[in-house]
Image (cartoon, rainbow, N blue to C red; front, side):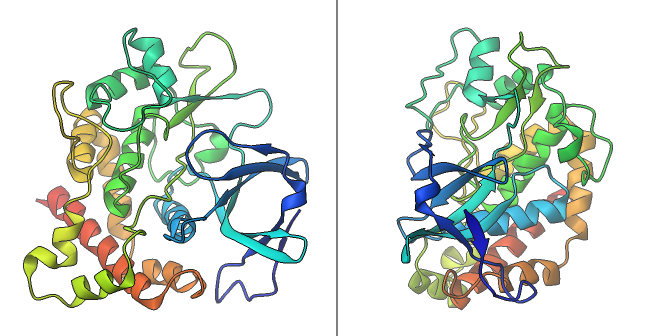
Length: 323
């Protein structure tokens, strides 16, 4: 059962208490500890943060930034796992995005369906050079927008799955998400032969590897104060790489910003729509999200660094858009 503590939600995000005895199944996808359970007739996933690297707060912050953008996304809440009265692991909880009779079809499965020789090996997620912008764009040609319930905040009229996916890739560039590999995007499928009217893009999910959450505070402080341009936040932000490639023959993935601009060329109207929405987001709105993360989860230094990272990436995207 998930219950919340008594913290004022206007000050910090609530930490939801998760009872380990309710766990029914372990999620085998991915390397992190994930467990499913039922609450109020809904299937809920608990993702544990067992390494102390900030994946929980990164996931929550990314979720709230998606909300500001109007981007279809899985909603995450901060949580803590308990075994009786013994506190175990911090983490996050979210509801399943594939309720009822819908199946979650991962990106590698879709790519294999349209590219017969695509290396869809579930064990290999990274350094898959066949995961190109062109291949993903071609695969998304048979994918429609997410279901209406996910589309309510989208700030423009999107007509295809690609229009929304461009927003996912812009999000990656903004939050320095380097984990959009071919199992970290998906479609919802009714089990029939894939057709555009049956295959819908799933909301964006799994952003725990974003926001440079694995840096320690010593490095954060050093970069924030450094006079050396090569050590400053702006230089650090430029190093973020996506899981997308330009050509199959390439040995290095595109940078997160490079990947976005390549996808933007595939759907320029959608790219413009997402960038206009990004332009409306003020520093105070970002700061308010960071301020709500409890300090026992995210230090003041981490919040300061994360704000600067987001502002640097927002500026980079908008400068390229406006020039």
